[in-house]
Image (tube, rainbow over all chains, first blue to last red; front, side, top):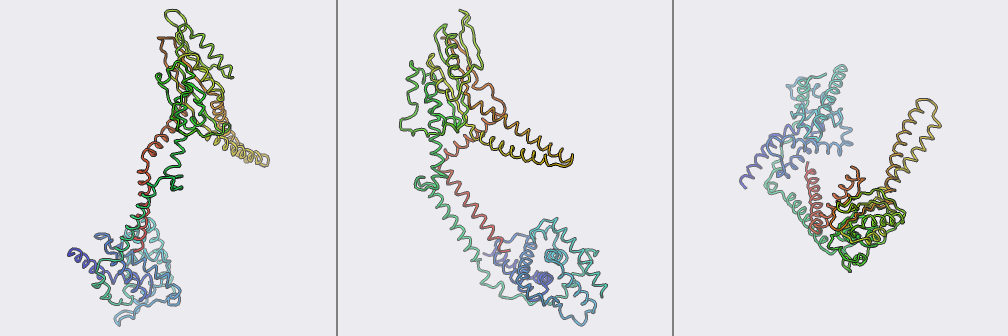
Length: 170
Length: 380
């Protein structure tokens, strides 16, 4: 019992420590604060509920984000109609110290990300925000590493073009 | 294109500007949630119970006599086995009694269907009156009667050999009588081998191989056995009906294809088309020729049985002529395949209920494993 409690404490600590990053990953996918919170909470609950089946060691991280991504996708599909007219997202009220161009840039990047199709957006978020390797992303989204690599490449190309266009328009 | 570092920086900035999340609920991992996962345990128990129930049902179904469960009777326990035993029994009977009677390969078509062959020991067949031996049932009287098969549809390749002891100095005469018998049935001599006696210069032994219409094979066997004392007899029957039917079907299909190509050929407008169609036509024709060759061979083998008779003077010895000298690699392969499937069938029938229980168990465990995997996937 003692060992189990210790393992559960470790899991709670890991989840709490990962919460902010997981939430922002979900937000980058969903661009909705409440949906992102709900998705992460739901993901954490699932992880907790099935804590007996979790992989050991560092393998838990891609697994955790696999759950987060799946709940986010599920949320995305259920909430898509509602989100259609909230597509501008909700970049947070910026602090007084933030320069205006930083806010503008964040909005542009978030919009460009939102324009990416789901199958490109998720690998990009997992790679450049969560920091998973291509192999870990492959595990997280149940695809082959080669597929992940090509999706990342395509997503980067499209993001570059979109951001360049946005910059030119600006 | 953006470099990875640029992209990482941009996405970091976008993520950093996301609205701050609400703090994680304190109740999320509360004391109640820390209790063992009831759902998971309950699901595990349900799975275990379902698997155990299925195992029990499978085991019960397997041990209940087959005739009480028609499905099992037909597919797993009784049906195949009993059918086979009905087939095997006459086959064995045929093989052991062939030396002597019409009952031999007569039982017939069935014996051949299983490809059964057997050799009667001299002691078993050394009765003074071969006719009596022929009428002696070589299987229990209670054994089921052989099923009646459509004689015209089955194509059986019949082979047999017979070793006879004849009186001193009568080998030559017996050879002539045997040859006369065979030709009387419409057969012909395909091979003869004689050995002279060192003392008298007359024939000490002779081996004569004849081919006789399959319909007269058993009768010839029966009549030949009266020429002397039967020392040993071997018969075999190979059912080539399926092979024959398959070849005929292929021929029909290929002929239709050839007709289509011929039609196309008449409508072809340019040289290229004509040459292409001719190539295909040639390929089809080659296949048709090969199949027709196989069909002719099977027709010949099944129309004429091969009987090899060795006649020996007292004291003389002769090697038994191989059953079929015309065996090629294809025959050997087919025989090996048949023997393998027979052996497999024997293992399955010998393992009986245990195999059925094992099979059910394996199926159930596989199903349970798949369900478990699916449920496990659902959590992510």
